[in-house]
Image (cartoon, rainbow, N blue to C red; front, side):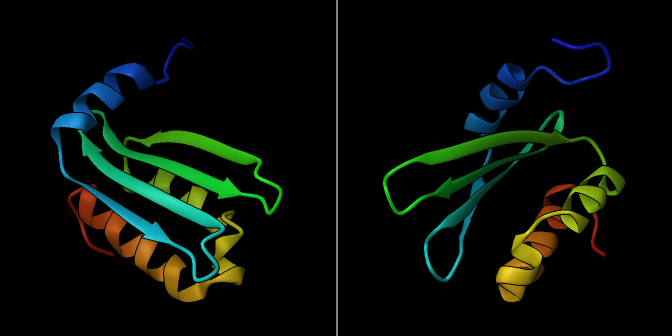
Length: 99
């Protein structure tokens, strides 16, 4: 665990007790699982490849500013703009504010 970084195992334990929301791209290649936790917003991003490989990334955002910075670099923003807008709305709602 790095100093200043949340413990993801704690966030996942908290998330299992909270509601979650799953968003999936039109082609089913990318999925986002969003969960509000006591540490902030937990997002699991899963990208599936045609040959069966799967990449899973797990992130915790403590505030809307860090979530916005991540969203600005998320490739789905260009690949599926409707999903991107939904991801931003759901993420801000889970963080307790609306933008």
